[in-house]
Length: 283
Image 1 (tube, rainbow, N blue to C red):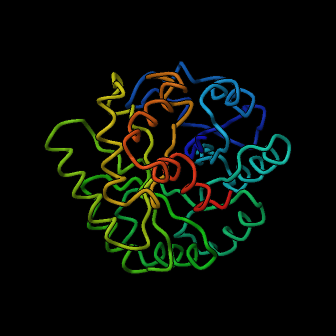
Image 2 (image 1 turned 90 degrees about the horizontal axis):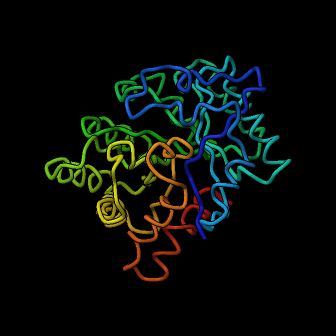
């Protein structure tokens, strides 16, 4: 089985949602024309994932220019009710907003809600208003996702330590910017630093964006390093689909994950491919 913890779904017929990132020409990791479709929703995902053992799906926020971020959560809930997917959703919410508690309550009214992904710079972590929202997210049991980046490690550690009740998920494995030896060592140090904090997890996804000509062998160390740092019970995997279609097929991505973890114990393999995600997201 494979539980995918990083997919993006959309339907342009939902006029209260907006996907500005799909429409622009400044995407730094390739030409988005290949995924700039009117709809990428559950039928399309099922068609592409049907031979990969895909069983459950976690949606990562995609409606970046929606007027009301809760509109995407409401749409995802309708989609889940109608089709069974997504099983859970990580949403957009301004944690620094004065009405953050009310925003989170509106999100939480939809059972698919599991947490918030922050797309802003790590400098926001030091904002007292942001920290109040971050603590509120933890109080209601939501997960927090951020990519951080190598330069943001200290800021992330300070935030994580400031509020041990909130679970911090290192998104996209910290997004290492290239595949150089020096980058790998610096990135592995970041992983170990964050993994030393008990209220942290790691999602490994989006690996193709910095390595579009990857092979299963070249990708393997970048999958194993987070597992070595956090342990199989604190790591889950995602495809970043359909964005990663720019670099491979869906089955290629999942088989590369299976290749990477082939030497782990059966229990560890099952945890990383499915079990940890099922436990963390309650799906």
